[in-house]
Length: 539
Image (cartoon, rainbow, N blue to C red; front, side):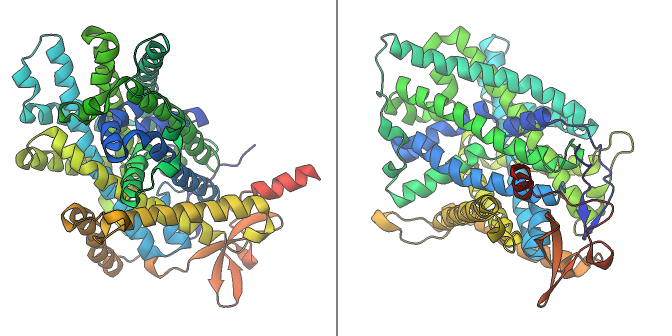
């Protein structure tokens, strides 16, 4: 029976203030897949991806999947040693550098807030579209940006209440939403493929070249396609942010992230291929369809009345992903506050709900501010989201990339002790991390790229400002904090009696953290290394 893991704060295990032992592996997998929101992601991003790379979009999805999967494996290994709800922020701070870890946490928080602002706008638009289809409101009302924003804020307030109310309420709500969106998207995708097989003329005959990554020979197309594909898969790491509230906290969140990646790959490839089979490129490239490609796709299959189910799927998906993006934001800021490097308000936990409710409300308020500003300064909801998609994808690539490299660095002293560990805790996280950072570099830095392509400062400026803003903020946190967080030595993992334990770097010698005489912390026994367990069972 697995031991109850305790979060590590400043090298010492502490009792979590959150509601522990609540989520099962099934719950965390549902939350991970729901956080990615396949219906919402496809509706908002599939057309942009096809415009960027043409019919090679399934290849771009595969190319984006592989490095993100490598990072998911890194999350699994890091979470086994330190199931802290700060996840990437906590692990990077503890193993790589506390300053880099803080900035990485800031980048993740920025991506989350931007998304919590963009997603409710889409939810508002789809809600009004659904009401218009029933004849309850006019077309003018359905396209009114102010009304869209108002309805979006109402949805955001609803999910904010549920996230603050309790993790069990959130998980149960996710079950319902995930079932609706997955069922509807898969039914329409299979229906489209069935129509073509049954004799309907294919707009684009299926080709093996669709799935050949070598078709992405243009470096700019590769970088853009990869960033969009990273956005496709972003969100599974929410499972790690709820690790302190999970059963088998050392293993379930990491496994949930990996399982969800393969579930998502399946549904993305099936749905994206179905869209390309049924719709022509001019139809996909039509600006009127790009922001609502799934609904247009459903209309071509079944006609308007049944196509409303797709609107319901995207709406449920949007609400689900708003909720599961707000969830990690509140846990991340709670962890940072607990470390003493973020305002104390974010660390306040409700006595009966056992959630960081104040931080949840603050994150939601910031998203509402962005929504209001977007409505004031943007022409349409679609234009707001189209500008944010690539920005969010780049921010995600940055903190995913840093986490992958941190994993390889954390386990560097034990990589040669096991082939399994060398590949899965070292090579794959490092390669995935470096690839994602290179993709971000190619899109952020305005320089002449091969094949005559070039980037510009206007596209890169929002990301550069967001990242650079983290520098004065981390300096402010370092100057004002009294926790000693920024002065702590980093740790690496070493083997002792067949188990992985954290060790402080002290010149040429290593001192095991947390326990007497260099032993492991008595309150939280180290997790047995899976590679060592496998060797023992084989013997």
